[in-house]
Amino acid sequence: MEDRFVDTLYEFKGLWDRPSKCGLKIIEGSEKLLVIFTELYNDNPGTSITNASALLATQFLKERNLDPQKVIFVEHTPDNTSKLSFYDEAFYIVTYNWTGDAFENPVWEQVGLDRIEELIKSI
Image (cartoon, rainbow, N blue to C red):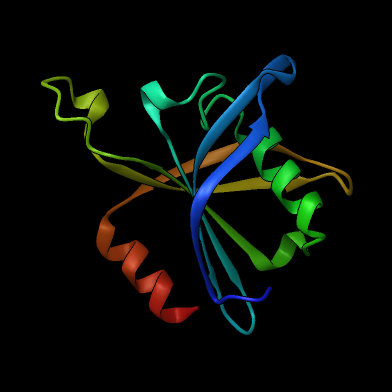
């Protein structure tokens, strides 16, 4: 990768190949790559990052020809200033089973911002 840090929009094929997009942050270290997908709520015309989690991670990995063992995936939902707790800011480290061709069976572990900052420092 040319840059150690990337912060951009990422377009992906959601469920049923529906055009979708999310925020994408990449922090590259010597051993690991931290990938943070951010939900865009109303700015995403397609599938949410959570509903397309394994599909999104697989597409990203294959586009960049990455080693699945070296990538740490995080899903981020930003604060949407709502009274509903569903829209509070949250971070999830997502782990998958790698079939040799695709990710499957995502498992989400909710973590605080402090854990994300630790990951970034350790990368």
